[in-house]
Image 1 (cartoon, rainbow, N blue to C red):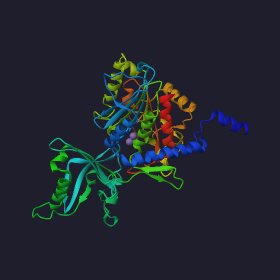
Image 2: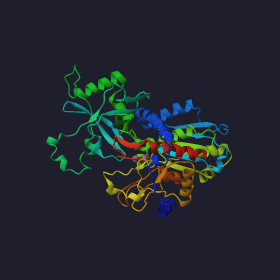
Image 3: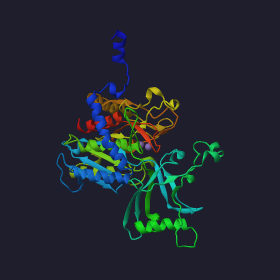
Image 4: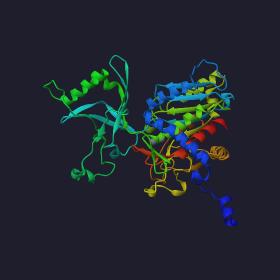
Length: 463
Ligand code: MN
Ligand code: MN
């Protein structure tokens, strides 16, 4: 190595492909970890399905429902299910919680099409559902792909029906139609944003009329009859339902080298899954380890299952009271990795990215000091001190990581749950996995980055 090269190695910050920094055995571990993730992704597509999955898995791994009046010892594992849509898992640490806890916070809602409260209609002998899209989507991407229907219906008598149609072999699927190019001359003149409009995202659900009837809207009646015979539903039951339309495909390897994974909803299940696995695997940690998987991030963390709600704060306060201290003292001494994705550099669209501060697939977990828009508006902006703490933690424990901003200054922007965590006086920084085609029905991530996210959360909990 020449003197210049030596000096460059010593002085310059040059992030590298994870393959240049880890050995073949660790690459193998990453590939194995990805198999569990792919199965999880194919089987759990909505916040409710993920919470159900987490509750089942946590019970198998010894987690008990949190008892506000319970007595807990180091290593005890507790779980709080918030309305079936967000969940907190904690492993009690050896240190009193007054010394602070370690929190990993990821979200389990993803962009999708929600059914409107009164969705079913017939037009020209086709039955369709009206939808209202949820989160930031490019609407044209949601046409002409197979879709499935997930969610819950509360029936007139108060009983609950869980819906999951379009995922199992043999299930029917659904679709949003689009114009043929031959007749799309006028549509093609629309901007990309308006190419398909919100009120054009109508989901096709049937086309045969009810047999023994002379009246109008017989196709709609036939659909209602099927729903009634099969599920005991009447049309008014849609009024008390949460039904979500999502892509019907599962997770797949992408590329000849199988280095990437394509799936719906990597944002943010690609952080939720490793932060879940880390809290399951953290043993008896020094500091109480907490993973919170939250809802509603994609629409601003609103509602009582989103992190703008105080449900995490209440849990930490309950923990504090059990140990005879105040919740505010726990929170003021706590640290959080706000686990959310960042935009991976896409060589096909380089103009929106500032290359020196972008995140790249395969360079490990990305640490995002601040998010926001228009001059850091709406971000918590992690302190140099906390950045320094996380930097040393990752460097000293073999976590491959990179720094990354979300796009060029004033190109756009976005937010995460970090600011809601910071509002409780908790030190917090965003970390996560770089994603290609973020918020599309089929997003792409790199397996090595997924694994480094797991390693990062586990390190954070146990070191
Ligand atoms: Mn996200
Ligand atoms: Mn998002």
